[in-house]
Image (tube, rainbow, N blue to C red; front, side, top):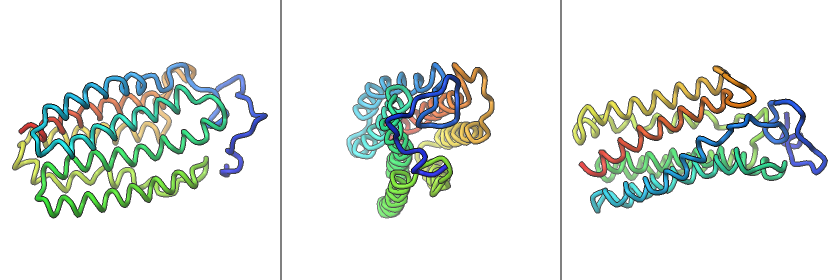
Length: 232
């Protein structure tokens, strides 16, 4: 399916049954609701996280918190609030782009708080440049057949493993464990999304909702890790 085929059409109307077209198709009843709740919760949690962080860690933690809220809010806006073809078309692109932004934001906090300054800065700049490239690709080319630089998601998402020695030194095995749990949850969730399984109740709570469960659980683990790094 081309970008032209998915472009907003004033005459397009959803079908009576669920279909795979992300622009014109109907959605499960609970699509996006979990991210909507997580978005609301992320605001006070992010404020509390920044407030609890030691002064030198606050800038990096703030980047993490803002990008986390941005990702959840963009997802909720797309999955819950976007009803017209035009809104779905553009918010879908923004949703995929916000994932890149949050990956970069999460890496900013983790690398800045666990690696020497020069090395951390070089890695953070590189990750943000790559994330920016991913955003540009998603905003320009996202459609049903174009996967573009989607491979960057797992690559950038796995970047924190570089910081493992610093995690061991700074926060011990607990920090490494939280990192592994975070990566595992995102990985399993992404596999479910890719396979579109399990798909419990397609019209109410489908495979996409299963993916969102994993992203929220992974986000909670990542929040704990960031708190540990910022307060130790």
